[in-house]
Image (cartoon, rainbow, N blue to C red; front, side, top):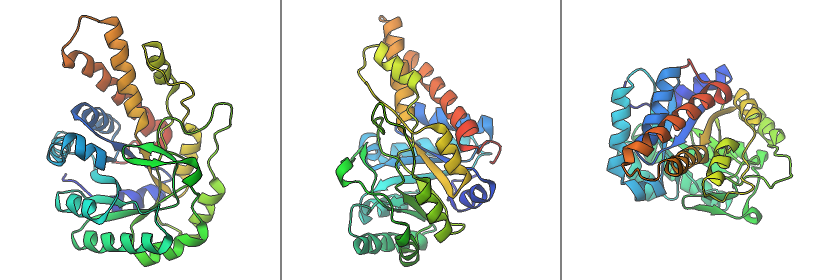
Length: 312
């Protein structure tokens, strides 16, 4: 099947009490690992491209990799999504360039300015058959070119969500309930806890409306340990507990973004490979096991965390 929008994905996910995995892609091995896992588990998927990924790999290369994944996996729904679009121009470029979904991130702007920007993107996107995710509330942390300090982060205010969705016409809404970007989401010694009270209130105010969680990598400790064992230095890297993500998926959350986990799996595997094979230099030798570990981790997420296996 051709690339799809997230509309039907989210309707089924909301009704079925599961979430769609949204995985950021940067190269061929990551695309292959994700989509092979989805094909084997019969899971729909959202492949995400950030502004930073487009700068690194080029828009054309990335879209062609995704097109190849669609050809190789004809039985699973695949959406191509712009993650954290910073402005109208970037969103327009992706809409014109074949994306089926875009995010406009005006969360750092005052409420009315965020509304104005999101509405402009929605109007252009809908005219071209593309859906739009907007964000209300600001996540802390670092991801590509998104860098927000803890002091500048803010939880989503449930009393604002109805007005925001009505005025913008957005198709899904990313909210801030305690997740954060990067691999250092919670301080060591603290108990990671999402604000389910905010999610519950948003769900009451927007019944049936798809909610999105960003910054939701669980930061698997086996890969953190692998990185640290083989020359890395990532003390205190802690993610969102998987059981809390599963609970969110049973509620109004229809899309959960996973990024850092893929990078940890790839980096840890490559570090270990070079330590054990110091004389090897062929990229195919060390990228193959990295791809396999990404695939295995994605399968775990699809089945045990998101619950979207068998939903393709």
